[in-house]
Structure formats: structure tokens, C-alpha cells
Amino acid sequence: MIVCGDDGLAHRLAAELRGVYAEQVTLVVPPSGRQVRRPVAGRARAASVALLDRVVSAAAGRAGAGGGEPAPIEQVVEAAEVTEAVLTEVGVDRAAALALVYDDDETNIRAALTARRFNPRLRLVLRLYNRRLGQHIEELLDQTAAVTSGDGQGAGLDTSTTVLSDADTAAPALAATALVGTSKVLQTEGLVLRAVERQPPRPGEVADPGLCTLALLSATSNDPAGADGSEGSGELGPQLLPDEAAVAAATGRATVVLEQVSYSGPPLPAGRGGVPPFASLFSRRLRWSLAGLVGCVLALAVALTVVTDEHPLYATYVTLLDLFGINDPAFHESTGEQVLQLLSGLVGLLLLPVLLAAVLEALGTFRSASALRKPPRGLGGHVVLLGLGKIGTRVLTRLRELHIPVVCVESDPDARGMATARRLRVPVVLGDVTQEGVLEAAKIHRAHALLALTSADTTNLEASLYARSVRPDLRVVLRLYDDDFATAVYRTLRAAHPFALTRSRSVSHLAAPAFAGAMMGRQILGAIPVERRVLLFAEVEVAGHPQLEGRTVGEAFRAGAWRVLA
Image (tube, rainbow, N blue to C red):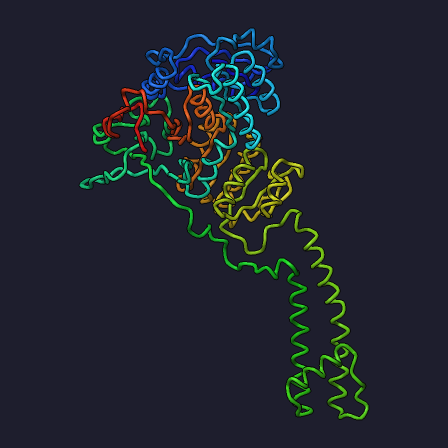
């Protein structure tokens, strides 16, 4: 296995392949890449997927991963670029899979085209942000492999090209936390599935057996000071895919079950004082001015009706003529009519600047229709999203697909997600979130949740702490680069605010299992984090697997290894 990258995802992916799948890995990084701290994949996850890994390996025509022990050697090659010489040095012509996880799409595509030419049977996994381009690249590289193989279809090859995005992989988990209070959400084939945490039954109660148990949470999951899901929890740590006996014996521990949910209901409440469309066209001062003038006209019409004893419609017509200065002077009329005519002319003089202001404001509104919007007055129950980079843009799109009101905060006016925010007409506050008044402009005091997704860990942490001081019960999700740091922050915030929901996630931690699974030849549907571990959902061919083919769902279940859901 060859992994090429320039950030933490490459190291996390290499650790995943070694620690979970016991694969020999060659890591290609820039000369400064070794400065990035290398995460370690737990042995518990290695045992949980070892059996299914041997099934997929058998279908691929190669040996299994052995007993699940991590490979003791990891070759590290430092190279500024992935050139033909570098690929030849790392043995791409003999490799089973190659992962290109550079942060630049063009670098990954160029290296993939070169690698496919060297080894048509190579399994390729690319990290691309551009999803439409990724689809075309998948088809192109797969077609190239089929043509080069000589059979025109490549049916007998264990060859595939999988294009993934760390932003797309992590976005559902981050967006779901703002929606349903959990990041354990899977979306596939038009279905939205949510992993729900069920509290242990009380004495004398019987647990509902309606849904299968996906995981047992650690015994310290309800302890604010506990090591939530730490690798040192031993038998008390989280257990993935337990059997019925293990579930029955785990008294006092919460479970995770899977249920289908639908988001067809109403969006999150937008707070009191909903703003009508008319309010977005004219300012409040102008609306009050127009209302005052209309009231004056009605009062003058009523007064003229009383003085002249004319019909109200005729009196209103005469008042409007006097208002616009197109009626004859009332020289020979009564004193009352003359006074009313003078008052109507005065109101007409006041009407001209108000109408001019209305026209200018309307033109300004239409001109700024494609510009950034400001948070409307009275907004509440919304999600405050910090950062419109790759991750923030994907999360924003997910939230708007679910019709959730969002207010974005971004310091760079040329950020990647600004165009998306304009297209979706999402309010954006330009400014540094660490400066006073920026979060207040996003109405953080009336928000439903805060998603801190900037590229700077300190900025996310500072914004989260400040939001906690404004709203101690605010739901907070922050993106942190290092998974160990994310764990420490999560435990500290949970201890300080035990009654508030806090989640800290590392994008590389959420994305690495999907990339590793794709390198093993699986069709990854998604990943659900269970405390500090990850449960993979994959699409596996049943034909040819004696452990699956011809068996019922119950017979195919292997505790700790896999469970057939559908």
C-alpha cells in the first residue's frame, strides 16, 4: 500500500492501514511532512474488522491480513512532488493500492494518471474537492485500466478508482450535530439513518429489542471526568458490534442502535418576529414614514367628508388632487376647505422625499441581491457557522438542503464558500471571530448551535469558549486538526459544562477510515463515530463469500467483525 500526501490525513491513513488492516505501507510526504504528528490506530478496531478484511482479501485473490497485528515497518519516502521517478522508487508497479491525498486536486490527478500508466491493475483512491470532476476522473481511469488490460471491460481485474473528499466524508457528521444533537448520521440511497444512544434500562426494566445494537458505549460515557472511549478503558471501553450475550451482560452501559429518520418536517424555529419580504425591501424608518403619510391622507379625507358632507370616495379623490397639487385653488370655498387644501399641499411636499427615498432603497436592495446578506432582525434558532473553507462550504450546503437557517462568519471576503453563500442567500458576517462584536452580529445569543470550522484550531477553540460564556447551554461543535487535542478539548468542555452538548472532531479522524476502506476494495457508504472510534458502513458483494452467500442475516452476523443490515 502506498500513501502520498502533504498533511495529517496522509499520516492518519497510513496508521489506519497498518493498525487496522495490518498492511505494509509506504508513505510519501514532503520533506516537512515528518513534522506532522503521526496518529496511532487502536488495536481494538483492528480486531473488529480483521474477519471482514480476510473476506474482501479472498475476493481480491490475495492473502488475508493475518492475525490483525499491525505491520512493524512503515517506509517513509520524502519527495517534494510525486514524479515518475518517485513512483518507480516506491514500487507502484507492484503495489496493490495507491492513495493520493494531497490538498491540491491537480497534484492528485496528475499523479493518478501517471500511476495508472505504470500499473493498470492498481487500485487508486483520490482525494478531490471538485465532485463533478471526480466523477469524470473515475470513469476515465477505470476505462483506461479496462482498455490497457486487453479485455475491454476489466471484469476480471481487482481494479477500481475511488474519488473521495475529506470534506464530503466529514460534513454529514458535523452538520448532523447541529440538527439532531449527534454526529452519528449516515445518508445513502435516499435514506437518512441515525445512530441513537439509548440509556441503560433501570432496575426492573427490560431493554427494547426492536433495533439491533451497533455498539456498547464505555462505562465512563456518563462521567464528565471519565476517559470517554480511551484506548486504555480495556473491557469497559466502547465495543463495536457486540452479540446478544454481550449486550445482556453489559448492565449499566448505554447502547447505540440504528434508526431511520426523516427531515421532511419543519425547519428549526426562526424565532419570534419573522420578517416579511416587504421589510427586506424598505427600512423600518421608511416604512413608518410611509405609514404616517397614509394616515395623514386618511385623516384629511375624513375631515373633508365632515366639512363638505360629500361621499368618502369623492372626498378622498379631492384630497389626493390637493396632495399632488393638481386641483384648483379653493378661493370661493369655505374656510374649512381652504385649510384642508393647505394641509394636503403640505403633506404632498413631505411625500416627495419619502417616495424618492423608497425608490433609492428599492434600487439598492435589487442591486445587492447577489451581494452578501446581513442577519435579519428577530432571527433565532439558527446555526452559526464559522469558516467558509472546504469543510465549511460542504457543511453549509448540507444544512441548507435540510432547510436549516444559517448565519456564516468569515474573515476572508474571497473565501471559497462566499459564492455558495451568495447563491443560497445565506447571511454572512465579515470579520474575525476573535474580535469583540462579531459573534454578537451573528446573533449568537439566540442561536441553536455553533459550528466552528475554521482552519485554525485556536480560533475554533476561542470562539467556542466565548460562545459558552454568552450561552452556557449552547450546542457547540468545533473542528480540531489533531485528534488527541480534540479528545482533550472535548473532555475539558464536557467537564466544565456537563449540561451542554459539546463535540470536537478531527476531520482526518473522520475521513481516514473511508479512505482506508476504499484502498481495501470496499464500497464505503459512510462512517459513524462511536465515542473515539469509527464504525464503517460498506457495500460488499455477497457472491463468492462462504461466510455470507446462502446465509440468513442472523447466520451471517459475526460479533465484533460485521453485521448485515440490508
